[in-house]
Image 1 (spheres, rainbow, N blue to C red):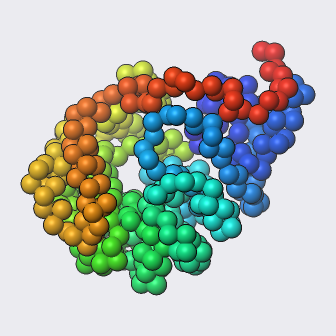
Image 2 (cartoon, rainbow, N blue to C red):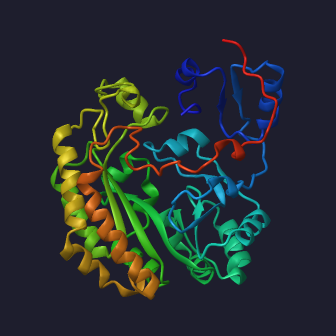
Length: 373
């Protein structure tokens, strides 16, 4: 947030960091020790930097999912106008050195790992080299990537051989005119979605498809019909959410210029809830948009929808482990459709409890002086 709206963030902090912290963190700590923190530190996006392996022992006994997390890269080369990642990184992709990823994989003891990055295939050559390097480790992993991976059979083959179980892909819309409004034309050029998805499934890779609604080219009927198509495509799981104009994105600036925002600082509003629509859609009311997104989730996670998607054996149930995960996760998400709807931002209901965690042990003991206010 400090990177996207630094002027606002400065109102709430003594000092802020714009961009990634690693290149400047030593300087920040040094300035804090001396009691001379600058008001703002800005990362030079043109300079490379070293990734830092996390101190995993500080997580203690918190009840996270039984899955390891490893950062393999940051950013995304795409220019989607709604995306805060593209805005924060200027659509730049930072691949992590492969030896660091391999070292982290060797250090954790998890059967399944989530590769934490915004677009695993942001640099296809790097992705293939990384897959080749981790294949001997026999790790099962999931990640996130763009639909462009389907252009490269060698890439899909390398991902499958290295243990890829599934990826999240932002389809966002099935309408070519909507994708163009999103500046996501590369999805349009991919061709028939059903054939592309079938191709990815043929490599044993499951798909978590995400969709957003509320662009000017869409109407209410497009929302539930998208969920019906997602069932037909045999997606492992799916997300159907209203469009949110995040600050700092081209979409937000466009809505602001055209007086489309109902609250220009919706993220600061104590009344804003998950699922709320902070702008005026063109062909549907904000209330209808919210309700239709819920209807799409209900359709997708209905028992008939789950059973029909389970019949996609190659993508969703090609192993006992994946089949078990499919039914467990779909049942969980089915129950959460109403449970999470309209919860407040920052609500603690779904956060793990911190009992038994000594937070001080997770920090380096530095004689840091807090500047006087």
